[in-house]
Image (cartoon, rainbow over all chains, first blue to last red):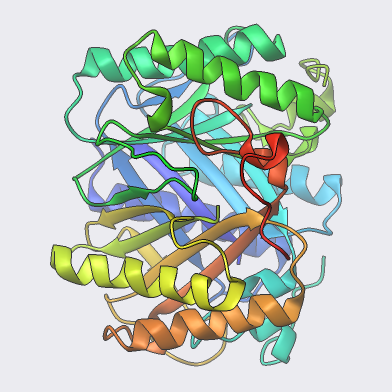
Length: 134
Length: 134
Length: 134
């Protein structure tokens, strides 16, 4: 973990999609200090019209370049850490031409025992890998 | 938020899909009283066979018209509110020709600080927008 | 519930995809003892490159046959139950030719009142069906 779901509209090249994934991972690495290979992304492209993301009343418009990000990870990090992550994701995505207005993020927490990275083992519980500090 | 994932089988027109999204949003607006532009939907169409939703033992059959809905939103609302939302979603979907037997809903809670609506800011925490009353 | 999201790369036949779904459901039935028709799967196929799942530092490589599984279900089960489920999912998937290295699982909890199986009713709350024992 984190497991990150990334939903975008069709129209970007594989290289651009890879850049978005790398930008999000870079932000998580930088702010949360997790291992580099702690990388789990599910990217889904959608035909136009199937992603709807308005502004929640903030007063801006998004484009078809919207990137909807859902992060599932262990609880325990405080708001300062989460807010720093959101900020860094936005700035890393800006570097790959995703406008700040097009970055939507939702975050869902669980626990270390809620993950199995392979072979049906809960590796944070067995101690095979260390739980990242919160 | 809420962020709503809507998974359906292929076969509906864009207009029908838009009607389903609008029905779900209308239900959330009516029951939860959130701002109209607090709209975040991710709709995914699937080839037949990739959505499986049985009846949990209740004794009914679904059709290929099944609409699988997953709602991610802040915690705090009580069961009466959630139950009213489920009921309203079903009745609004009935108005766009989705049978009650085809409406499946799961609900996952987080907190106000778990959302960024754009620009990498956690706007419920910064105070840029008010947290909807629970 | 559980609601299970299964994300895989393109390349398997419908029969193979059905086998993966059946293996996961069989594991849940065996370990959690839920009703057989308590089956809710959303399977999504992705073009190569859109699923990224590294090893979290454990020291192995996955193949394009990776199966990314996300389980949403009620809280209350202890770690022993969850760990047993992860193990059983891996062994059931091995029986349909999915290697243990290709099985990634994340788990997210909610409550019985967070589900509506049809008709807009929260059937665990109304008492129409019994809440599975944790």
